[in-house]
Image (cartoon, rainbow, N blue to C red; front, side):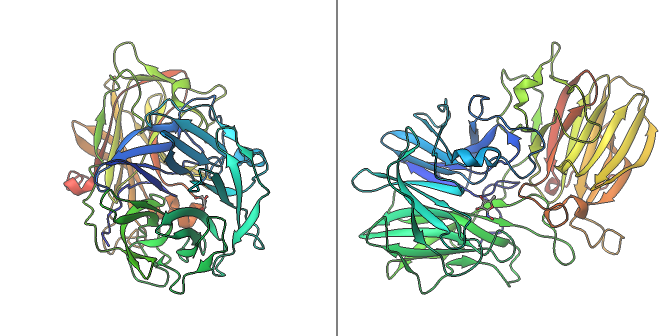
Length: 496
Ligand code: 6LW
């Protein structure tokens, strides 16, 4: 298996569909807005983000502080000349799943309808050969974990009583169901074991989309549990048939580093596998595709008329507080009342690499460049008045690591780096070392450093991953430029 994800950074619960020669993929987004990032590819290896499905307030509004609530696993399908996306807003889970549709995947997507009466997570839409649409989802109830009902996807109205479809193989948390038709079989693919180190994918088949389903004797068909594989937690897969008639799978995985239990910091990422069919059962071939390292670096001067879809904010659409600045850059207006610890108006991007450097050229006023897992696990370098303040918040701990005079010139380049810890150093057991500082004529000047394990999922918990971005602390502050550079280019070497 290529150890490189096709989507690095926190892009969990992938769902894929194909129209002609074009592949489209969505992932879950939790507390961040816009929700459900959407990607396009023609070779399954290189993906470009073409938007976010839930990019308007009339589609999705999330109260702040959702953390790993908000938008859970989506399913993306194409039927009847239209794209369909279904997911669950955990802040409104009792209303049922949220369904939107569009002709153009880049949008606009319609205002959602809800599958009232179908309560749970991980919804899937599949059309039977007679055109009937079936909603299948995870109930969260161990006695009937996977449920199904016929549905009108344009209204969300259930057209049959929900019924139990399959209980899985007995592992914990049967979820993430998807259905596929091949030959004379219907296949039901699920995730089991929980999204941690025991994660797995299992499959059953039936002559009918409504079952009864028989379990594959070779289950699980994908897992890395109890292995030394560098990619762990593999599970939550979705299959797609290629124009050639071959099949492929996308699934989530994590890349832990450091001492036991291993710390993954960039969330659950999306990986690719080929599918072979043996005795009419799918077999995951993880060695087939050679996935290249993705080019994750970018420089943003905010001159484009609209923000790039990579920009996200917890609990608020970025357009609510980020507007083009008069003389270039982007103007970010602080929340009122601001919070001294919680992200209220953070404009951020997903961290995607083992080593990276993020920098922001900021004008006057108080701003924070922050590396964040959630409101209780973040490290920041703040420009406050005449000082630069390096600070960490971990659980109830809120600690200033160091404070130094800020550089004299009007624009300051705040900088955070994630670097491999030096062997034998006090940080060697962690996944990385977080360095907080600023760039002075391109040279990194460190103000403080901290063990990166405290900004990992194994410490913080949750379903997201690291996000790095800028938060205005007071008033309206201009970010003239933001750059993210992966460390593999060697640009981080040799700096203090
Ligand atoms: C997702 C479910 C899961 O909906 O976690 O562990 C939820 N698996 O499939 C959030 O990713």
